[in-house]
View 1: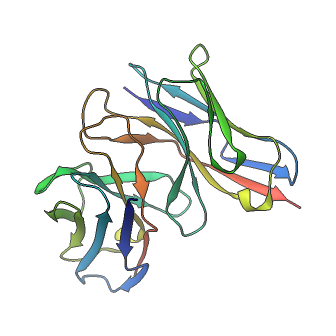
View 2: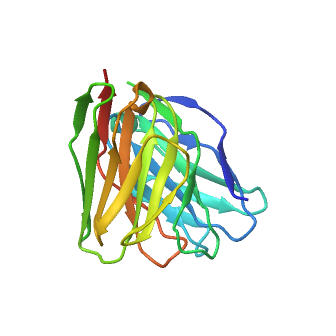
Length: 116
Length: 114
């Protein structure tokens, strides 16, 4: 079965400092992994996706994530935080293997606070 | 390009009243469609998904139902709302027939039950 664990429910950084949001996954097959961002009262926006190509994935707004199979991790990073990065972030793993339902498994989310 | 529309943005309903939330997708055909609920400060709970017209799968037993009368239209309904139905409802779509595609979300409906 597939699962995803976001290791921090809340992360606080200062503007201009690096961001690290941690995610571990469990999958019985080669997974697809995603990071989404959600601003208050908005839907989720796709930041980046890993689908078994390059292990270092670059996304929008300067974010990137590295797929590490040996560590079953897919941590999200950004070199320099901006105030507009304050939001909820979700790590997501594909949920149904070779099926066609497209179901995804969501982590519980990490709230990123950016201090001026 | 593909777009997803969800309405209304906010809704306040009394307990026991009916509900209808609508979601439509443009720019793609035969998408997979999803309804989620997000309680305050919580993650996403998948309520229903659909891989085709008239094909609805329910993930959790509840007071809600879903229908897909057209290829790109997905409706969430209830005959009688409960207080526990309050929450943020999100519709999403993904490419049909593929297992590892990302989902794309609408802007959500904030539902408050009084």
